[in-house]
Length: 315
Ligand code: ADP
Ligand code: ZN
Image (cartoon, rainbow, N blue to C red; front, side, top):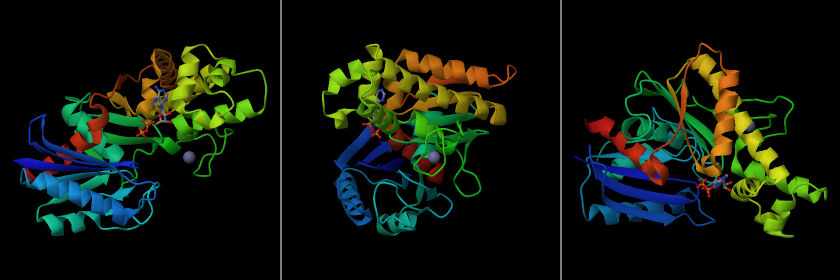
């Protein structure tokens, strides 16, 4: 049985085909989403990726990872935070009609959780919470061995869990959300603002970017922290502590066996990981046990998750 996996990311589009049960791609196509992309142009690009794959193989189902909120029961996209024009688009039905096979669509964090459960760091675990810490922070549940999406598909929104009610304002309007404190772009923004104050903190960071503060990214903050920069260490550890508090609270509330962490910020190094684990342990009750581990599927996580999603339609 061949399965087609699609990944609509914020900046890139990918499509791949695999045999159910295999861990190798039969075909793989990817393209960048143009900077002025809208839903129509992204769909056009994806269609061309799909048609070039179809020359090699004929899939029996399609699984889709979408980078934004989705109603998985209807397969309708609610919206994309990065690309305009996706509002209420019936993505599942569009694809099912054009390609004549069953289609399942879900948001990228839920899909990644499913992928890690089926193929990655969550194999054999009946309950896990997957968290991606990257441009944003998102999460997805596996409970009783199956995705748990919540009444409206909105379960797992750890990114906007408030961990510091007096903290800085998040894009969602609230203060002190995990995403506001832990994500890469916000770490970079806070570093820039601090350097603009012309204080004497952040010497190493300033040395790395010179006068062009726009060059500061989450990655640069973590490099400066590794070199001992005081400001960068503070921001990186604040990221880790905030995420750790969120994880500890979720452990108390839901008691999953595992937390699986993916996304680029998890590449920040051992110091970051140690603080996440320590803070989560401090926040959870002593009787609540859990493990925090790194995601195993890497950049192809959404595609492998989409394979798992597609396989549920035919197996
Ligand atoms: P995405 O994962 O959303 O496609 P990137 O991987 O380029 O995008 O980066 C997402 C965020 O993670 C950016 O803010 C980036 O600076 C940050 N990031 C990347 N690598 C690291 C790292 N080693 N440590 C901390 N943050 C990082
Ligand atoms: Zn928020």
